[in-house]
Image (cartoon, rainbow, N blue to C red; front, side, top):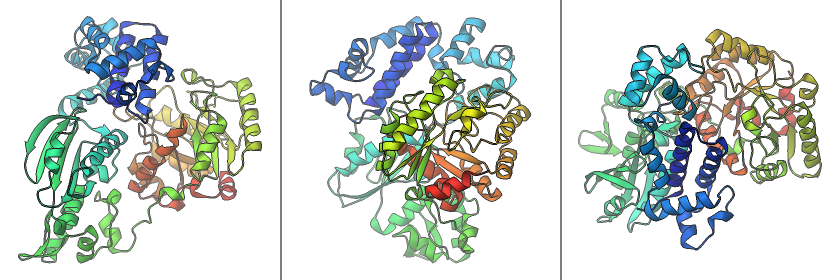
Length: 572
């Protein structure tokens, strides 16, 4: 089987984790992590580059040793160094890395202090409350791990939306090459743009006798064929994702798309409406008796039942059908509404590009403004800037701004909120900035009262404008910290501050339900990408999808405003 960049990156990241558990040099661990990140983002497969005779040593972050390991993976599908290390480590420590909220450092600590070697050991230790006295754990972390272990052993694996998107794009591109295929669309929670995806439902229309199913089972990422038939085939891919491909007739295409997009509660509510009106609705169409009266398009079905078309992101049975009947459906925000990005990092802290490179990329997207928001000193792991370095950095932003045409670079910082709620830069520096965003990057285990009070104190600071990634979650890795978001939102509204919807697909923080809460309270949000390199600015689409799931319109998001109006909104 061909080895793709995502496979190589996953193996190198896993090797880095195991090296960290073993206690290897931190610089060596970081080298593998950096290489994995770079490889995951490469637009061209390394396998193709190697076949063309490329020298991998010339790629940034790839030294001779890592280049040899990449060649080994591409040529054999195996990595001897990884397999050797897995066999050397006691028990099944590697399995622990799959548990949310556990990283390599915590796994190493659990092994060295409590002798935990596998999931069973961890489960027993959690139930015996042995973890709460360890540094970095405590009762709250024990509770989270207990919940994670329950889910870990009992729930389907869900991939982040961006990971599922790469899988879906590659697979649909491959299937489109099949003779006779007309339309292909990915339905399910993927089409509703949920932040994580459990499986992929792909609908295909094609001419009779098209070999699309045969083409599907020969896809190079198929690991297991669960079932194969002329109208439905199910496989498991190498990344663990289940994929169903269904061939549907054109006359039933809209009905199938509606049915398999879901959600289940939305579909049940529609079926109830149809039954009351004397219709039967299923994946084949809408029927009156034995006669199909609608089903070719989704819009036809909604119209027949008395509804306007309802966008996929809204189909969660959260009041969208009632709103549709009352002509109260939101005019959902679209990406072309965005006038600027308010969260971007550069080489000054932990970014990959210069101020000018980030600004040029934002300009190419048609943005009117971009805030440069490098980390402050408390976030040492991100090379945060102290007061002296920040003074120089702000001067650098001004110099680039003076020579840039067509876009305004806003002076800013992602200022750490310290444990007591104070900010990580003095007022003298903060007052020089066009916009101040602030975030929590430490002490995630505080009680709800302390965490909430900490952020409230920060929002009371007269220089603060935006509270970023407000729950601190990392999807599939770290649960949100305990905080009263409604209280935070009400204080932000009172103070003339805003909350961020962070579009990084690893975060998508705020959750859709909190976006809806903010809208209902009258609090406006910003959608920004937390970009650490030029290509991260593309993450805006994930933020827009999350905003749409939260019923947000352009008027609910302040960076849909032109710069002059946006500046006015920043005045507290």
